[in-house]
Length: 425
Image (cartoon, rainbow, N blue to C red; front, top):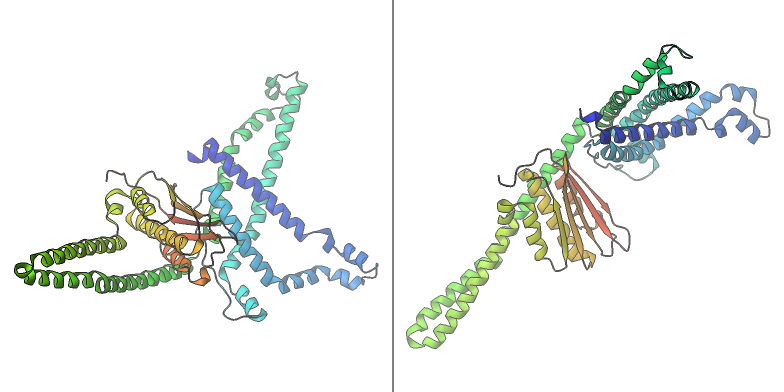
């Protein structure tokens, strides 16, 4: 049973402890003495009317309604932290919901957006359900702690003899029950952690409608990208290889005419034609590599990324750790995302080096591209990061950017992947 492994038990227990602490902090903030009638009376010099004291709970509820948009926005931010914690401790693969923004600027539009944000309401429901679940966890831990302390003191008073727990003195036959309670701790922790996983999966992950919209945007982006690629290929063939082949044909024609009258000039033309033929082959090779690199098909992601790094104008360190080959869509998306990121590094970051790290985990492929450039990477400035995010979202993945002014820039990509193929296949 995987849930009873020591490592799994430790991570689940840590998650439950943090959840209980967070719930206690939320309850303390909601019932802080600074908001009590006595504190308000003291602030007003002891002159708070009795009527106000009587209606004080209703007044606080009214203030809660007034500040509800801000509470919803805070719940959505809290959900970001909870998803990260669930991925780290519960090993739950939960995608980030698509970011949303008000249609118009201004406070009224912002309030309307918050009140109609289904993701924020689900996050607020998660917080509300987290409180009773944390209460159950705390109560269970309290009972176990008291029983454990009683066991220790009973054994101590019996002269260190643990048989006293079952001898009927001074605690009767409860010793056996306490031992059973201790043995059930791993099962109880696993059950509580399972409930947390269900809450995170059902309330903090994108809904079916949101996931459908994300996939629709990813599909539209994939179609637009395919059209742009076809246009680029057509332009490259017309302006590059076709022009080179036309020049080659003309030089061969002139060389054939001068072959008998001026063999030396014909030889020079053939030399130029040979050079043009090699350049045309190189351009075709580069064009084919841009469509789909053969090394990726034949040998996988690690050799393909090494070949890509060798063509970059700056040193690129590549570290790939995969238990096998991911499925073709994941492998292809990962390669072209890294290609675009490294192209952005070479063009815009003024970096002197970069690092590419690819890790194959249980349920996802994690990619990290880091450079030592000037930072300040902004998706809104046409760096292609928005398109990359949509490409990753088409596979229900996520892309995050950390790029402070002055650098470094770190782009993290996570693509769901639940199976790997053997390298030989």
